[in-house]
Length: 172
Image 1 (cartoon, rainbow, N blue to C red):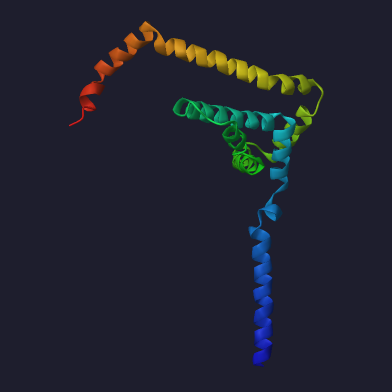
Image 2 (cartoon, rainbow, N blue to C red):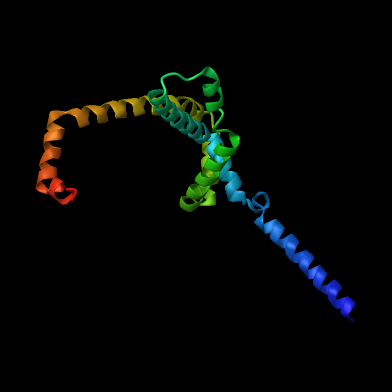
């Protein structure tokens, strides 16, 4: 009788482990909606935009490195450019998917996929990264001009005085 209990308990244990393995494994737990969101990211051109985020990050870090270390061997830059790879980009995508999942129904995601697969959107997808980059440069230039303008700085100084920021932030 004890042998029967051991076999029975072993079966339950194996079943439990299999069940845990299947539910804990992200490959098996990916839903149809998540797969469709990945497809939406691809067909909409958003995946390309995410790679531009990588480029922007790496450019910013490389400028900091160049500012701190004027002499950098080419081999460093070769390895530096490999710091962010497929694994890191997959992690970014995995973080972005829940945002879409939270704000869009599965039906909306499916309709957007259909829309973005039409020839009409091809020009948009091709030109959007260039437009975004150029608009970003324009926005950065505008921000620099505003923040350096005497009128803006006069208004800012007025706010600092009005709310006594120097007084309340004085080091003791």
